[in-house]
Length: 408
Ligand code: MLT
Image 1 (cartoon, rainbow, N blue to C red):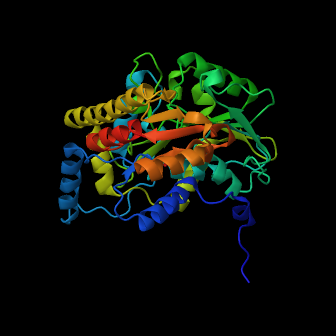
Image 2 (cartoon, protein in one colour):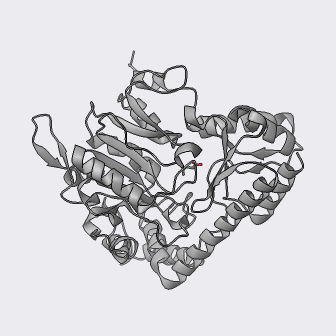
Image 3 (tube, helix red, strand yellow):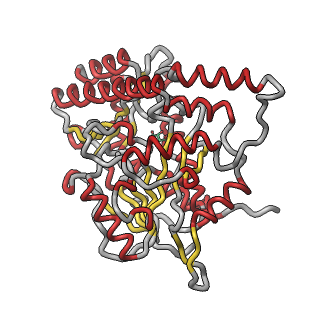
């Protein structure tokens, strides 16, 4: 009989969001009249920008002509999109990133997992706790961890607790690590990193020849112009960091799928024989072998994000969701709940009231307010006693959810 990948059997229960889905489905079947409001998974709700839709429609029309038809595109993404990204997202912020170093993809969740293909086993890996579960689970699946303990933590990983005590800032570990996952603005806590904090990580990584995997999927939600959007705003980061970005949250592409990964030329890892190898070449090889690129139509839609009209619409979308976050923060604070995040990120991280554990609060909110959130413990042991609410929803749903929570 065919053998399965036994690493999958090490995974704790289900992936967090399907698990929430199962509980919500069971509740809805038992209570078909309940009008649920979903502030759980961070999935956008507002329409795609007009500029993106127009560009996609034109691309479809082009595809209907012999001259404008596109078959397989470059696995790395079309040059015109990579140029726009390099220019507007990076060079405009003083980052030395070229179009060739941008790899267009179908998601930063996928890329942050797929990147393990080019990294060896035996790396000491650091993740924050709480953490976006994909970083941990993809390492478990790839056999890069030990078994999980009673607290849900996996052997072989270095956990960096982030909590109100350290301002939700990941602290440099006392033990040496080779691979560090950082996500800023942070999912799930909504915290953001300053330049000084990122510099400390870049300095650490360079001194220890470590690699930072920097997830900047929520950079568009940063409100303070002093805060860094990219790790490459920090000097030396080209030598020690890969960055992931996405069109999902700023431009509403969760359903259409487009993202990017930056692998700087000259960024190196070590081969088994001790020689140094460029990661760019390995990632390029990986993508060319296992990926056929994002569709032409979708990449034209993503390119429109960089047009004047697209920029205005994306800014309006981000402001809309950030107003939702402000409403959630304000209403929860007024209800006496301790809130964090939600100022530079679309997630509000709250302390569960009355010392309830995270899943009890999940059930309480679901049953009493018919509001779905995400239990903090689903993001790691240190998330216990916390809860995440997403600002991605319509204004009327956010207002209604807050009214229901106020009346609990
Ligand atoms: C979340 O809710 O954490 C998001 O859905 C993450 C993601 O985009 O995969």
